[in-house]
Structure formats: structure tokens, C-alpha cells
Length: 452
Image (cartoon, rainbow, N blue to C red; front, side, top):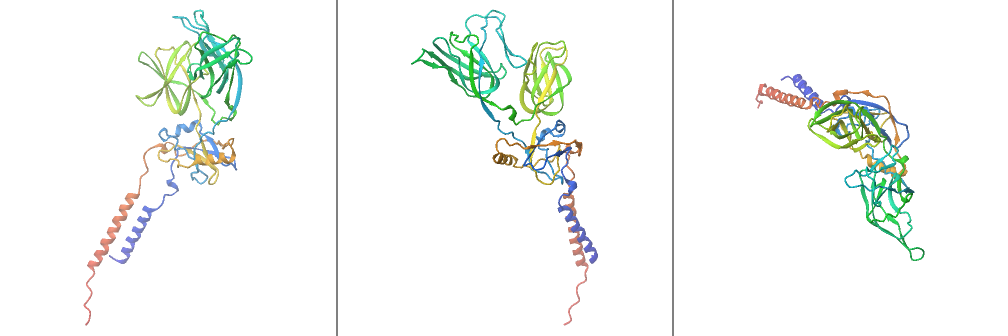
């Protein structure tokens, strides 16, 4: 092989090897489907953004929002992650609430009806038959969700010795026991008297409380008030995203198991945390099973909603926040028209640090790219320690969204990897170079004998 041929093979070999080992270029950056410009004020130590509804249409459900990133002006990812709300602040509160007696029921006859009005007040309607006997149950409304710590019962005219149970609820339907068998004792007057009318409580905050006595003595007359002391969360200081309600149109209805299935397709897989249902025209009562449909044959039962005439529809069915795209209402009886469905959801919030070169952008939706595991929680905890419990990240707004790679970024097909073919080319060219050099040496005539 001539010298210039060997040089040519060597040049090709070096070029192929360089191409195989070269780092990724800007054109190889991860693809994202959609993006928004971030309007962030300067000078903040951290920024907080809320995902718009359209982001859930692009973020892949199987990615768990790991395909949501924040990048700087040069396209480099900055430290970002899901935002964990600060612990709620609270203040002590003491109030007097009237004790509302619950009439006794009669055997074989419907008892009293207890429900909430549109303002949340307790409404007690007696049963079909007249109440008999002394009252054994009282309700009172704290007007706020209060973490009760102390109950002081009203004074009585005579000596009283009672054993009471105290329960708590936020909807007048689901009750939790707070105290069982607490003693209320009032004996005598003046020196040496006993006045034990205070009961200590604990447990999560609740608005409604129930008192039940185990004896036949009903010491509290009409207008008696109980004193409740505890702590209430400052509503203005809640560190949470505002709940948004979305009306969802019925997309299909079919017969199922002697009843009806009503399906509602959401515009995106939203993190639904509450569901509200009202009946259409011509229907006045229904029992509806709420199901989150996950696939062709799978679903999660979220609970039951019973709609009655005059029901307060501001009482939604609370569910665990989770991305849901198809809600099904199943009624054991056929309805004249599909029910009206509204879903409540709170947008996910992300926090990011002022790194790199602004302005920042929010790309969303990718089949392959995932957000780096930044220690954002540690950074936010350090900022709260330095700036105080009331510190919050600076809120930002988003500009108009625009398409980036679109559906192309959501496909699972990976780009063609040229590394393996280039390595094979390198190996083959190297082998050809070795063979060529060997052939040249074999064709070369032997050197002449040396002259003695």
C-alpha cells in the first residue's frame, strides 16, 4: 500500500472515532411538548409557580410530573421541584355555642332528620311521630373547624352526676369519638361543693360536636350554652393553592346491572380532590356511586353521593388528590337525564431557585426527559429557618403558552443511536488498515545481502 493510501485510512479512522466519542450537541437537547415563559421579578430567593390546566394535557400521567422542568435563557435546567406547603399557623379561640337537643325517635318510625343549611347551620327536623322521653343527645356548631382542647358545660340548678360521650364531625354524617365516659359532677353549693363541668379534648379540627348522655337526667334546658376552647387555623395564612371548580359535560350513558352508567371525560388528567353532583330536570332523588375509571376494566370507587330534594350542593364529596381523567356515576335506577357533575381541583405548585441567566421558561411533557433530583426541600427549609415561618417563595406568572415539539416529544420511540454503527465502522477501518500494512510488507522484496 502506498504511503498516501495509509495516510487516508488513518484520517478516516480518526474522524470516525471522533464522531463516535463526540459529546451531544445542542440539537440533542431533550424534547418537550409545550412551554410557557415565566415572568419572575428579580431579587427573590425562591420562586413559586402553579401549573395551568393546559399543562396537565401535555404532562404524561406515568411520569408523575417529573417531565415538568424550569430552564434558564440558555436552556439549562435550574433547581426546581414540587413545593411542600408550610405548616399552618393557628391562634387560640374560645366561644359559647348553644346546645341543640335532638328529639328521641319512636320504634318503627323514622327518627329526626339532621342536616346542614346553605350557610352550614345545623337543622334538626323531628321525625314522623312525636318524640317521647327525655333528651339524650345534643349538638352544637363551633362555626369554624376548631381543634378543641376544653369543653365547659353550662351550670345546673341542682346536683348532677352524668357520664357523657363527645364526638366530632365536619359533615354531620361521619362522627369520630373524642371522649368516652367523661364525668360531669355538680354537688352542693358554697364551701365544700363540687363543680366538675370541664372536659379535656384533643384530636383534629372539626366544626360540629355531639354530646350524648348515658343517664335519664337531662340537666340542660332550652337556651343552654357550652363553652368551647381550642385553636383555629388562620384562613388567611393557609399555604395552599386555590381550589378551582370545573363543570364536566356528560360524554356517554349506558345501561349497566339494571341501572345506568354516566361517564364524564375531563379535558385533561387533573388532580381532582372534590366532586359535586346535582340532578337534571325531572329528577329529585338519586343514590350515585362515584368511580374513577382507570382502564377498560378497572376503576377506583371514590364514594357515594345521595342527592335529595333541597340538598345543599356546596357539600362536595372529598377524595384523595390524584390525577383523574374519566369519572363515572352509577345509579341503580334509571334517571330522566344525566346528572350534572363538577370536579374541584387544586393545581400542583413548583418552586425553583434563581440560577443561571433569566428569563426562565417552563417546558412540560416528555417521553424520555425527567427532572433532575435537586435537593429543593432542603433549600426551602433553610430559607424558612433564615427568614421566619411566615416567609413564602415569590409568586410568578406565566406568559402565553406555545407548542415546542408537540406530540413528537410524547412518543416513546427513542432517536436512532449512531454510536454502535460508528464503532463498527471504526473497527472495520482499523482492521483494513492493519491488513493493508501487512500486505505492503509481504510484497516488499527482501533486502540485498550485505557486502562482506
